View 1 (spheres, rainbow, N blue to C red):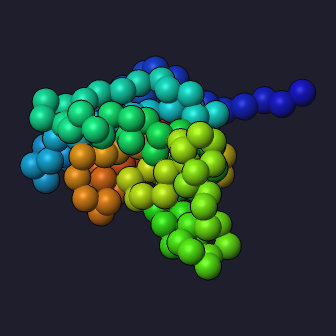
View 2: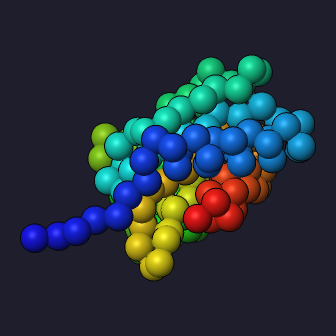
Length: 140
């Protein structure tokens, strides 16, 4: 039998708030998705002005980060032609994201969830995702 650690709705609210604050700081309204360790959606917010097209992208970034247990940006180079993971972005019915902005949420060495951000550049999305994680870890 396994015992799993996973974030709950209250944790997801802390992650959302931390990400929202950073998004406001940098002036980019974002779509923010939080999943549990299995990639199942726990919380989502589209900030006023967040791109409609970014809704699914943010959710899939969080899904990928949690499920694959790595940052989505790590797949960017690895998924290019001639690279070891070429074509992986078409896996899981196209849900596996290879653009930066999805990060696993790690506590005590275990992935307990994922956060996915979309609407800015990949660097902005990652910065906002990290701010959400930082706020969450500070609350523990």
